Length: 415
Image 1 (cartoon, one colour):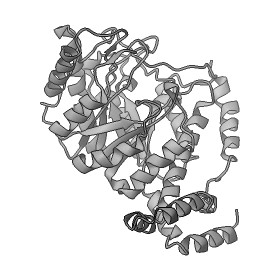
Image 2: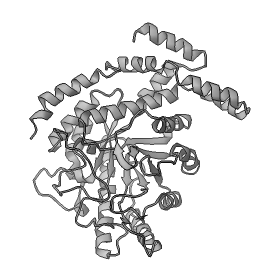
Image 3: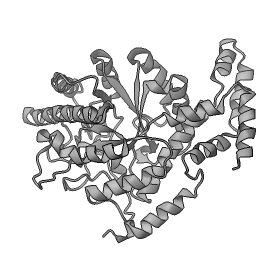
Image 4: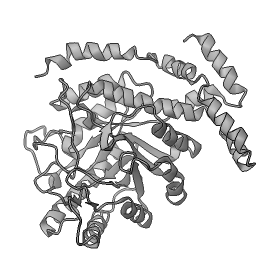
């Protein structure tokens, strides 16, 4: 689109009291944490074997990253096609053992992530982090909630290691590290004791968070799950468990948009949590029939969450993506998801919030409904194109040409 079209859109939004320049500047400041595990199907660098723990990737599209160097190159390529300055999100299984001597997860140290810090520093990126409680011999259905004290001890030690690594990221990069805890603990069939595993999970977390981490460097979040493969009937870490634990222990309850019933409106949960915690953390995914972690689309669910984020102040949210699709080009999956999240945020930033709120407060519901609907066909695309143009990036599907060239020149050469 031309500058003339942007200026026309600018005038149209201005008539509603919306400043498009202010919206563009606000979007430029919103960082989204891009998940490394899309690049290699959640494989990591441990060679631990098949992905287990209630999650799976499907598809065998060629060219997945096999080494740290390949994964970093792919991340670089993806970020080069995404406007704005963002963050990267790592799992503990992406430790890099430079001396070739691998250590167990309960012995991980900051030095095993030195290469990631070097990578992030050169690109002025922040790093977020996740302990890895899956794809491991001691992750056989139950980890922190295991009835075996030896298993619980191992995973408690892993959690504490990850708090120390997150401190390292925060200190080295000068930006707090969001450290998200998710465990796959659950049972395939109906349990006879629901209370016991949850009590053990609570006690395990109590021991992990007894470690006096630097709260200026680390922001711990805890994530619920509805169910997983092999844990269809009972999930220890339910939404109610984590909501209660987070509020009692001054932690953030993370909402994964794929971890609820498909009929639930995750956006509706945001304001309630925000009232009591002050901040809300997000993993944005897309479930199809179940928590299948599809690439997010510019759909009603994502747009509704984006509107709640903007209405309540983007500074009060930690936004990360979490999906892994091995059936399509993995770099395209990153770029498409990140740009869709940005589009949703931009649409929300272009909303005449005060006008709509005033209509609601005055119970002028007809006028509110009409304006809400008419806004859907306002020229947001012209503003998006201006946003991308200022980043010297294409606003439409033309970016896919670069991805296909990279596939031809790089990905296709991987065995």
